[in-house]
Image (cartoon, rainbow, N blue to C red; front, top):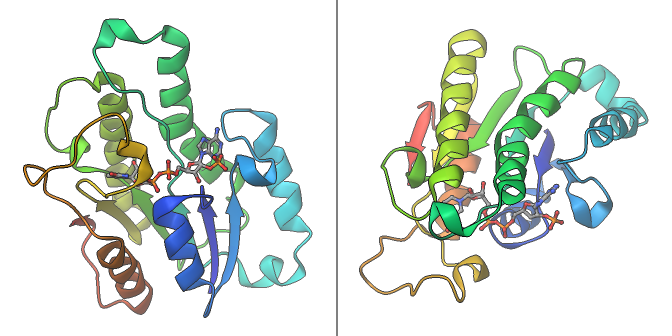
Length: 201
Ligand SMILES: NC(=O)c1ccc[n+]([C@@H]2O[C@H](COP(=O)([O-])OP(=O)(O)OC[C@H]3O[C@@H](n4cnc5c(N)ncnc54)[C@H](OP(=O)(O)O)[C@@H]3O)[C@@H](O)[C@H]2O)c1
């Protein structure tokens, strides 16, 4: 299957990409390979890169995984507007932009996976704008599900990654999601064993 993923340079999707690469063609985009999804010109660059891949024209994408994100912790007044605009830009707007430019590569068989979060289901303090971006993403995914059918939303709880370092102490109070369970969910979406829209892990 041809799979496009945003943000595979670290943690969750670095692990997943490594495991999915065995049986699939992976096309990944993030800043490590010069695709900054907060910049408007990036989307035309992605389109031209994909156009250069001959078999993609015929086969299209079997799956699109929208994963790239950023967030800022702490109280609303403690971060700048610039940081907040960046969160909405990357976590929400970039996915809409990407799906628009992918129109020629996606078809009725393409599965779209949105990486959501527990934070799009439950109100939490100290992350209001990040929370808004994930609620927005959940709305986008749910709306598209009504139109396109093959749309999925994976909501991990806390995944033990570097990202939490120096921010919160991951003690037993927090429910965690393993990398393996996220991989399994994706594999089961690929094989059609998993058919639910929203997968809370
Ligand atoms: N970690 C958790 O506890 C947790 C919990 C629930 C849900 N999730 C969800 O899981 C997903 C991945 O989490 P993770 O922990 O694996 O995150 P991560 O390690 O921070 O990875 C984020 C990815 O986003 C990319 N990215 C950041 N800024 C970008 C930009 N401007 N343009 C393009 N790509 C950009 C990064 O690549 P570059 O640096 O190369 O750009 C990186 O590959 C997120 O959607 C998150 O909401 C995570």
